[in-house]
Length: 222
Image (cartoon, rainbow, N blue to C red; front, side, top):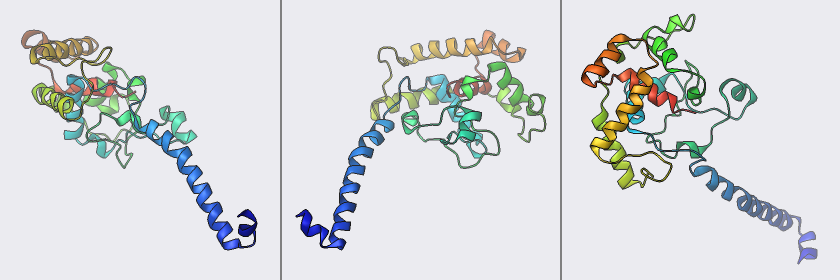
């Protein structure tokens, strides 16, 4: 057979192409499938983080910020490790974005604090000289929609088998249990903030403002 192929260059070329293509598929597909699975330590969003994600979408943060670090040194030096598909296993929809008017936010939870986000969202130029980002003062007045976030968490758990309530993972539980968890997460963030009105609204009425939920979501991006 091989002597025949050597005498027929066209068929030899076809044979080599098919062989290399098959070998490439065998090599690439398993790795691709592995990268598509949830990466280590990737967990579903908590109810408070989901509420913050809704605000991120509602206020079109993804119009100016991407969440996709490309595998180039200039990107990884600035933003951190490049992203892989498994990191977005629980994102519906994904928020990769297509434009960077502002910096990429895929790893912002690794290097920004609650008080930094508080100051930045209230007055961007106070922390970033020359920033063109608008202030989002309404987030300090509006309450986060925790009920809708809880409904989404229940839906994706039942419909898409998102692994809530597994050992070592994110707990969901009943509405009362979820509310208690949301308040505990919110308190940890509010304790780091300076806005007294937000602190009073939480302590007196249990109100959780949008800025608190958004910070919870941004802190989850690592």
